[in-house]
Image (cartoon, rainbow, N blue to C red; front, side, top):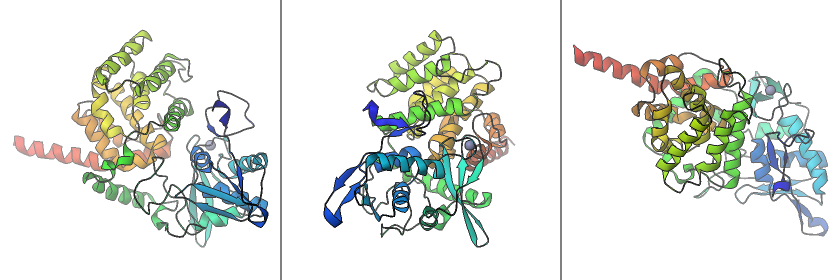
Length: 413
Ligand SMILES: [Zn+2]
């Protein structure tokens, strides 16, 4: 299927370009007046673009003056009429340019947010790579659809279980009758609202609800693995590794890049024998001469942790116990967490207190280091906004630390 994967920016002729998507495919169904073009892999394409599949589908409709329909549950995305795959691919390029790529740096890692000012609403591309926020052309018809069906947090896991579970995608209206968008989800929120929400969600997590659900287990489909590799590579070059003392190690051929790749490639094939695997990882780092470096901790965190991080921390803990030594190493570990929840799996944000707790309980983090980290926004591992979000999310844990500290003071008196 290698030929079925293309660069998100098709104008970039670089086989090492890290942002890839499945090549859009089409299937003509029906005939006569009822002829229609089904896009069987629209959900996958949209996932690679981090957009609800309804958006590009509707975009095609706008551009072609055609009716569209989508059945999110069965992942059926349809444009009425017979349309050539190449034509739709060209249109998709247009969608990507207008609604995905950062206008400033052309990076596709952006999030659509809706900014309300008085009565007017703007749709903004919030770039994870350079931090710029650039507006989309509000004259485009699709903007009306987006405002009516604001982006909701994309759920992890490919297939959802249960009933009535809205697919990753738009909130409501459109052609899918049941789902309803929560106003809290639509775009811009003040810091206070964000904090409130994170706290509420964190409280929820204490009841082991969300995380206990099946679809949080590590998704090992090739697609998910690819996604993680992308996140890893993206994380490693999109943001500086903090190149303070060890020169430029950002590229995939550096020892760090090699370690990360190796771990990614072997992580899911070790058949339950975690200990042997961890020893092999350490050995690999040794061979590369970087087993003592703090950056290796960052790379390992990025390569090992997935959205199942809460189960993975105890599993991989011994490796981190062996590699995390100084404060600098702890900060690198926190940097890895920051990228995991900030860039790769934003829906893990509410789990940050639990993640920190798990690391703390394994003695991988010291109170002073976490507190210092949690109270100082830094651009070292992510962009500033992400860094801020992650720290806000960590507040319940920091508070717990503080209170636990007070308690022990009382005991001593
Ligand atoms: Zn940008």
